[in-house]
Amino acid sequence: MQPATAVAFPNIAFIKYWGNRSEALRLPSNGSISMNLDGLYTRTTVSFDPDLNNDTLILNGRRSTGPAFRRVSQHLDRVRGLAGISTCAQVISSNNFPTGAGLASSASAFAALSLAGTAAAGLVLSERQLSRLARQGSGSACRSIPGGFVEWRAGEDDEDSYAYSIAPPSHWRLVDCIAITSQRHKPTGSTEGHALAGTSPLQHARLMQAPQRLAICRQAILERDFDKLADMIELDSNMMHAVMMTSSPRVLYWEPTTLAVMQAVRAWRADGLPAAYTIDAGPNVHVICPEVNAPQVIEKLEEIPGVRQVLSARPGGPARLVD
Ligand code: DP6
Image 1 (cartoon, rainbow, N blue to C red):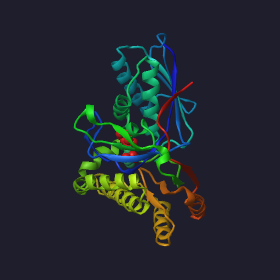
Image 2 (cartoon, rainbow, N blue to C red):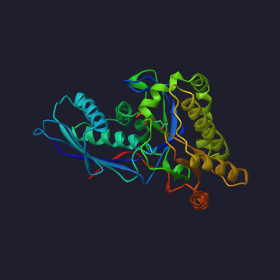
Image 3 (cartoon, rainbow, N blue to C red):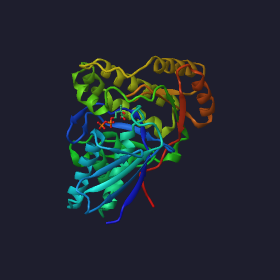
Image 4 (cartoon, rainbow, N blue to C red):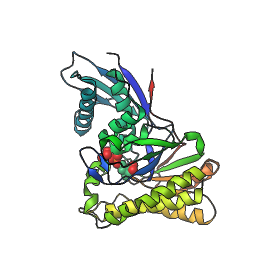
């Protein structure tokens, strides 16, 4: 069996995934929409080797044996199940962005692992099958399989819960300017957080209105209507964080700089600069804006005290195999 290498981009959710109907299969409580982030990537090589007695994982140059390793090995079990093999594998994976600081490294990681793993096992899967497989490794990873602007349909079961592209990367010249406020590992990982979502009295209300928010966000993307998109992504992000802050136990991902950026972005937009914020399960703030406004947005973000670094990414393509 030949080794295979895949590259996948993380994605930023415009309409968030928070909470599962099935934790085991990662069937989400609501559909979600995201944009892949070009330039930031995970690169993963998988080699199945009959001489190995155990799977091994080298993550960012270091041997990993903890929870990250177990999660990868479990995902390899899914690949082995599909291929009908029991061979152990070596996985070498690296990110070109900080891991665990809310930049959704699990999305690009499990998208790349699904593609490289199945290719190394000799399987050729459709985009939909790959997306379903990636979903079981990390929910948001299913959205890093197709390219550009992507919707994950919640679906009824394993078969029909997958992501597909609603518009290619070239459809809309948006930029995600990511204000990094901290490079710490987040205190509560998303997997743990999803399991708490149902304990918030606000989750029910959030889910009830998710179909409307999805429809408006999808339409805003298709029509390239920035004002509509801005309004919806901020509302959806606030709703998810309201659920996080009111679950048992409560989870608060924001730091003072997170709030400072949110307030600055609202003020800039009121002054006519098109920009909107959205925040995942971490303190960093993703500021979405049209490409023409990105230099100004980045400059302004860099001036905010507490912002350590600003990364930027255009809409990215699908996960792909590389030589
Ligand atoms: C806040 O996909 O990281 O980024 O399935 O447990 O790996 P697991 O969770 P994950 O959750 C992502 C949560 C989010 C919102 C989103 O990306 O939609």
